[in-house]
Each structure stands twice: as C-alpha cells, then as structure tokens.
Amino acid sequence: MSALWTLETLSVRQGSKTVLEAASLAVAAGEVVGIVGPNGAGKTSLLRAGLGLLPVTAGRALLSGQAVGALKPEQRARLVGYLPQERRAAWNLPARMIAALGAGDLPEAKADALARACLARVGAGDLAERGVLDMSGGERARVLLARLLATRAPLLVADEPVAGLDPDAQLLTLDLLRAEAAGGAAVVVTLHDLGLAARTCHRVVVISRGRVVAEGAPREALSKTVLADVFGLDGELVDTPAGLVLAARRL
Amino acid sequence: MSLIRLCLLMLLVLAAAVIAAVALGETPLAWGQYVQALTHPGSPPGEVLWTIRAPRVAVAALVGAALGLAGATMQGLLRNPLADPGVLGVSAVSGLGAAVAISAGLAVIPGAIELSALAGALVAGALVVALAARFREPEALILFGVALSAFGGALTALVFNLSPSPVAMAEILAWLMGSVQNRDALDALRALVPMAIGAALCVRAGEGLRMLTLGEEAARMSALPMARLRVYAVAGAALLTGAAVAAAGVIGFVGLAAPHLVRALVRDDPKRILWPSALAGALLLVLADLAARLIPTEQELKLGVVTALFGAPAFALLAWRAARSWRS
Image (cartoon, rainbow over the protein chains, first blue to last red):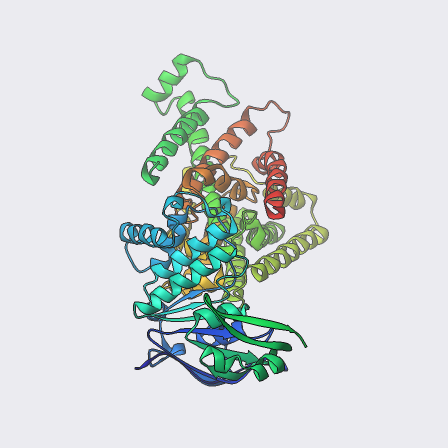
C-alpha cells in the first residue's frame, strides 16, 4: 500500500516560535485519519505545511510520492482536495456554482453536472439554486463538502469539517468522508471531539505543541496517559452500542 | 438570463443612451437641423453632432466601461464589494502624473498630460503587482492601496503648493475634477489600445476571481494558476484605470457603482459580472456626461463632480447595507 500523503519530519518556524517540530505522517488509500490536539497545537499548520501552503524550515511533504513544492497547481489539485477552516463565502453564488469550484479542471457544463451530483450525494440536491449566503451554517457545510467531493482527488483533507454543525450534520459529514475512504480515497480530518474522532477514524494522530505525540488505532492513541498529558483530562474511551465515547472530566 | 442575452440587452440600452447623448446638448437643434446633420455631416449642425458631441460621448462610454470593468475586477480580487480602482491608489498616482506634467508646463505638447497620467497609473500598477505577489492577503493589498492613495494625494497637494502660476493650478484642478469636454476622435482611439489590453487581462483573470469566492487558501489549492491570474487582474485594472484617467481625468465612483447595478443579474458571479459591469459603467458615464451638459449652470459641470455627487451617497448606502449583512 503506497502512501498518498507523506510528511517527513516537517518543521515550521514562524519568527522565533516553533509551530511544528519534526512532524511525520503517512496516509494510505482507504483510511480515515483523524488529527486531534488542543487549540494551538499545530493541527492546521500540519495540514497547511503538508499541502505546500506554509513554508517549511525542515523536512518535506510528498503527495503520491511527489514533492509538493515541485507540483504545478493543476497537478496538485489532481492529487488532493482541501477544505479549509475558513468557511466564509465572499459572494452569494448559487450552491451549484460553489460546488463546481471543486471541478475547475472541467469545462463549465461538465463541472455543473458533477456539482449537482455531488450536492445530491450530500443531501443538498434541492439547494442547487440557492445562494450560499442565504443558507444556514449546516446547509453551507454540506455545499462546501460537495465542493470537496467534486475535486475527485484521491486524498481529501478537511480542516475541522464538523465545527459549528449540529450532531446529525456532524455524523453525516463523517459518514460521507468514510464512504469516500471506503471507495478508495484517503481522508484526513482535524477534529476537536475526541469521541467522534475515536468512533469515525481508523487512525488517530495526537499533536501537542507542534509534535506528534501519539499515533495509532483510536484506543491506543487516545490512551489514559495521552488524555491526561495532552488534554488535561481524567478519562477513557468507553465502548457503547453506538461506538466509542469519551467519558472524562478535567484533571 | 444568459450572459449573452444580458449583454445584448445592455448594449441596446447603451446604444439608446449614446443616441440621446449625441442628439441632446447645450445647443438645442430643430428637426430640420438633425436632418441636415445626417445628410450633410459638414454643415454647422453636423459639426455639432459629429465633431463635438460624438467623440465626447465615445470617450465617456470608453472611460465608463474601463472604470466599470476595473471596479468589477478589483471587487472580485479583493473579495470586497466596496473596492474600486481608487482603492488601489492607481487613480491618485495617475492624477499626480497629470498634475506634474501640467505644472511643469508640458501642457503645450499634445498628449504629454495623457502620457504622464498613464505612466503614473502604470507605476502605481507595477507597485501594486509587486506587492500582490509578495502579500497574498487582500486586506494587505487594500491597506497598501490606501497608503498609496494618500501619498499620491499628498504629492499632488505638494505640486499645488509649489506651483508658481495660478493658471497651472486651475488647470490641474480642472484635470483632477475629470471631464470629457472637447475630446476628439483621436482621444478615443488613443484610449482604446491600453483599454483593450487591460480588458483582455481582466477577462482572462475571471476564472480566478470566481475561485477566490471561497477564500485565498481554497483558491491556492485549486487547479488554477492563481499567482499569475492575480497579476493579470491587478495589471489589467491598472491599465484600464490609467487609460481612463489619461483620457478624462480622475472620475470616481463609476468603478464602484457599475458592478453593483448588475450584481443581482449575474447572481453575484465575479466572473460573469465583468462584461455587464463594463456596459453599466459606460451607460453611467454617458448619462452623467449628458446630465453635466443639460443641467443649466453658468459654468458647465465637471463630469467627476457629477459622478461624485451621485456616487458618494450611493457609496454610503452600499456601506450601510454591507455593514448590516456583516453584522448578521
């Protein structure tokens, strides 16, 4: 199984502050990898550095084995789709045009058809003509997810895709991303909800102060010690009929 | 409505406005004189229509189209409905170029003021392009634009301050107020070349402007060569603005208002808004110039004064509405 995304000892310094310190990660097709960590731990920086959006001071990032810095925009767009944390749309474009932005490589008519299909997949088929600024946060999140799916990239990277969504929309979002992984894509998401991460991700990567401090299956990565040391929580993952949940209190 | 149908419809409206602007003016003509002008272009009524009014209307339409297109491009690039060529400081530096030329006594050389104004716009444009390549955040670009604008204004004031002759000062002031009075066909042709290049650049950047809807990061991760498209947009808007200032002096608010007139008709799409904005800008300026000629005043009103009188309240209204949408 070859890695679709490889980060080799990435370090990022901004001014005198170390944002990332020798962070490594390899993501293969078919898996959903969750990146968790406290606020300011470097989750977003890890994604951005790995995608070539942030200059790195050491290490390298590879997309399907090719150095990310050497890729042309259209080559990079074929290898990875990215859903940034920034959810603001500047203009009130109809949902189908927002979704079609994911398929910038296609002629307009084809991109439009693909956009409508992706909107239908995220359960927003009836929103196609509605302006994104006239939507609720949950509706807009679906449209942005449709844009991510429209990239048809083998690697999908989503920064906090469930932030601000109601529980149903959170589960729907992760179900859709899991379905993409089941279809052969590699999916990387950053999450704040540790229980949700444990339930939905095949593998969890814990980041603290710019370092990868734990990595593995949810139960191993989110062990009692990690919960205590990184998150300041006294707790553990508990098996329930609905999957793993986090039972914890502040230390 | 499809884009082509919208543009055709707007062209029809513009054509009607152009005909009205050529037909009407300070000198009232009788029906017989219109007929005479059509059949004998060399007759006195023909002179009024074809050598005084028609070139003036053509320059107004071209300048309006250039400013409208530049405004739509800047708004798309900066993802800000309040952006326009003035925001980038291009208008201010271009006006400074003209002021320096007039004060240096170059007005006697034909085309010197225009070239100086265009040079000023290109210098400002080059500065902005260099900055745009270095700083990707649109906010940074706006702040630099504000600084450039203030600096250009300060230097223009300095030229005023040091100007030895009151005649030159009056000339500079007239230029800064903007006008299409006494333009000939050659003026229209001279403006056409830089405007065509600028328009081509802006339209080429359209795809990138649309991609910027979801922010800088999403655009950078797209398949489009955003760095290049960004330079196209800034360079195109600078050329259009420079050519407009060279042809008619500093005329504000058209670049701001034109895109807003057509925004709803293209469903806010920053790419499809480009040509309709150009047509709306042309329409606005042809009508504003007609108003400047028809409003009975001792001194003919300056075009820039007319657009500012209508444009500033419109700007306030837009800012009011935008602030309300930001709050919610």
